[in-house]
Length: 466
Image 1 (tube, rainbow, N blue to C red):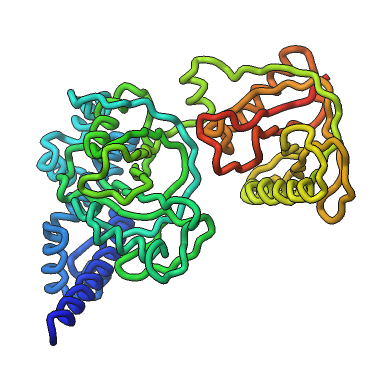
Image 2 (image 1 turned 180 degrees about the vertical axis):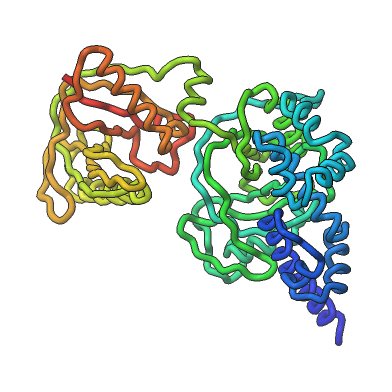
């Protein structure tokens, strides 16, 4: 065997080990409350217990039993802070047979009893004298994403080899069909499986999933050492930062911002996202977004931030002619309807050369939700109506007295956007009026505008009244 063959064989062996260990780490994460013996985990990995024990210690730098014990106790510590569950229930869920055994192990790990830990840590949540960086988050509702990833430990998440492997697997480099939009820069993500800055996990043992977000509806097969996971959507506090001080930023968020914010964390992993692969020394001017999962309603949190209700204004408008497409859609189909219908109508306007007469609209003639399907009418007002056929119809956009409120993009997510509909409806009722027609959204540019900035004007919720 020559040197090149030997190197290739070694790399293939390492990839095989990583794939098997990834399966083991995922099994531990999903079965924290079940017996996790060396024999059980070796079976998951497909190795003999003796060989598995050696491989695990070599890659993770701790024994199987030490790793399982640490992960269970760190999980329990998070539950003590983030929930009001009884200590006994947390002990059982962490895989301990008795609260006493849990209490002894917990005190050895954290130098505090579980109850003292909850009492002392919850009010302060690790407040220290860390340098307060620019901690002005935006509160954002984000959909879920599929993530092609490699499970890493410590500095592995900054490895050029890891990111090169991910780029090739996602089709950014190499011959694979791309699983991301080739016209958009990829989003590189580091998901923190251990809570950043808690102090309970040493930096060289911190579990981090290095990954690339996949394009919506992209399909990709896992292949060693790369896996595919779902990155949960929901409400996030998003911190924007330029430079290389990622660890310091995590520390500042959790130790300085969080204790003063009065926000509660969701039990989901935080992550950092950038347009460039993370490295040991990323350029100072490269932006990074830190996503911290929080509980609550986007509408209520934003209202609390401004200490005021949305401003409702009024205007008078004439009836206008428009081209429109109406469909019955539920909330999961709404995105495609708004985008596809607008593009279809806009193409006809360009083809016929007619002049527009206002902003694109989406009129909600019925409730839209998981089980409610509208109907929803997408339209573009025009000066004259050209010949129409197929799905596109000639229609009238009702005018008269209109109550409306303006939203930026980060306020316009479902279901939080419903709070702004409620504000306009409440204004109509409180001022002695009645609704005269269906509510609608009037867009600054177009529905689902990918180029719109999160803090730029995006749409108006408009409601005719009498």
